[in-house]
Length: 164
Length: 101
Image 1 (tube, each protein chain N blue to C red):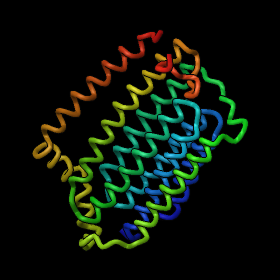
Image 2 (tube, rainbow over the protein chains, first blue to last red):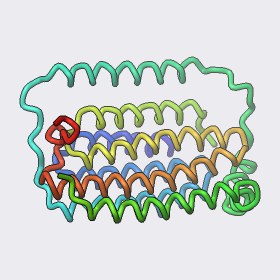
Image 3 (tube, rainbow over the protein chains, first blue to last red):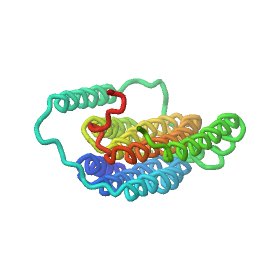
């Protein structure tokens, strides 16, 4: 199940990278987000998986598609000739990927023994996460609420402004 | 969990790199913002993997707050894109050079 979801996730991410039309880019990203939500469910993190579908695939991607529809974009032309900055960017990306995979392939000792599936499902449930969210992280929750309010007001003000 | 956590970390690294390529190569500002969302998702996957394998719920709460901040970031970023589009009628990031003059 993991390898199926992982393959679809990587393929959808590559589709988002390659697609010319921004609308198809956004739809590939939605598929990718659903696959990541499925991966959260295979990790027994049920609460985060549901939140991922509701907030990311539901709200944020609808916002992206709405803006694309509002701006009525046509597909931009691709790069005509090979630019040296693109080659440099490709080299930077490959170096980043090889570095990350090398660290993972080292099988580094984390000094932990993974907990069982039952304990993991108990940790990832909405009840246990909600309990700790409203006790230990109550202040952080209110700060996040203020941040979202400020972002909403700022987005409305910015969308009205006209840059010279 | 039937698969070792290292597979999840490797998948997260691949997704993060694809997001980096999107930021570096694409010229559409909206697609660049979507690539940033992909990178945020890769990091969230790492956090949930470690949180579930160590049995510590704090990592998943960090992911919860990270999703909230990503929503705020998407709203403000798209508002900036709309504001720029209204004055320059393009979202090509090679054409946006407001600080150049």
